[in-house]
Image (cartoon, rainbow, N blue to C red):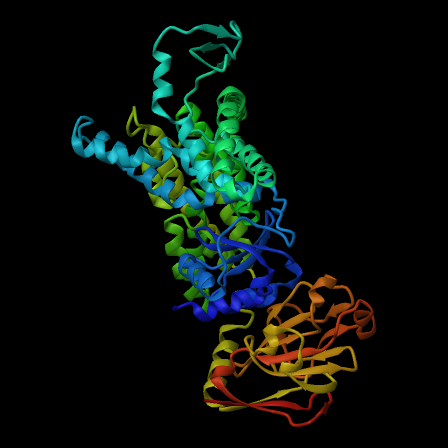
Length: 635
């Protein structure tokens, strides 16, 4: 339980386990479905040491952790007793989800294995191209079996994840997927057809079998995506209705029986053919748009890829790419995004080389390493996006790289790894190593070089993680910190002093966010409690973090749940990263209007790094601006 405390803090600040409908995880983030997102302490989560950031996208509340998210996820489940299940609301009905949420929930659980098997298949193609293996050898055959295992039987895996997302029984979904790839049915197409439907059209289909006299259009559903997702949705609807109709004593076997008897034939007769034709049209449409100008398509998709990742919109391209690979054997669309991770790590390396801030250097190292392997969220959220210019530069470099990839016609022949591990996925199973592969590698180098050079020369603007003082001032502050054992923190407010446990907010009342006091303000002005730097000023201006020159980290949160106001009734007189002096006016707020909104103005003032100090609190019940609030003695 290395991450036990972190897991407890996360659960506490998403509103408690009773506010969580479900939780899953992807490569870098925990993905919560919350019953009420307003109960989550987003700002608190963002400022936790082990949390990169918090995102709200696709109906999900996403807590970005980094590469060790599987361990944190396990800890979250262990400490909370939560299960990774389909989101349900208080009435037990599945919550409505956006398209992006549906796609991410269906594909996220299998992405790791999909990438692994794709890499194995890619390396196998590389071994053949290099002459290291023969296609008739046992080694090749077994590696090929591993590589094909998931993608060939994709309908079975997606049957599990899709029907689970739609609120049905996973094993029913798997049975439907198994029916679609049943090998005996595909063998029936070897003989003479009974007759042909839609002769002379693009939908011409020979009929080899019928079901109760109804013609069945036999198609290959191996590696397919759309048919099983639509079938799983329909099966979930049928199953729910059957559960309401069938008596409990026979429900366990009659519900699956009738669900399969209804859904599987309808899938072969109607859902499968229609969705397969739709998938083919989707593939042709995307290729038509791409072929209008591969270079422009590459610049556009490659340049915006990281923006799409931030908002979760990249999930819209994943099923299109998988569909293109399954129907046409290759996908050029997703290939145009591959230079983005190299542009990102180029920018991160420039930040590491140029910055003088030690914390930023420390963050840059793991972000760079994970970016090499294609996991760029730590780099985006922890480094480049807060600094703004490096992120913009990385998008420009990624767009140029995408344009080169489009120009040389690089394809993805399988869904493989990320970063450097994506290289085998660009090797053609039939043609081997081609110029398109070398062109892609050149684009990676150019994107990396542009990201590094442009960021180094022009990209070091001020941002969340950038130093706001000169190196001399920082050194002076460090010297002061090491020589001062005691620090006095003044009251930022005028009002009544209360103990934290009286606050109607578990996060603060429990001391999880820091040790300190609460103040019931009687005047709507907040002053700097000490000289230092504004480490965090939330967009709604209702909370502020200050790091003092002596190293204390102070968090002041005006009122409870005041984030709901969206900044209304608050006015800031400083900015994030700004230098402030003790007693300087920082924020003004309208106590009367906030209370009129039904929200308390009780304000916690806490030391978040309190474990470094012996903290002595004031014994006064009434306090004025500038009066001593805490006395901090370094341990």
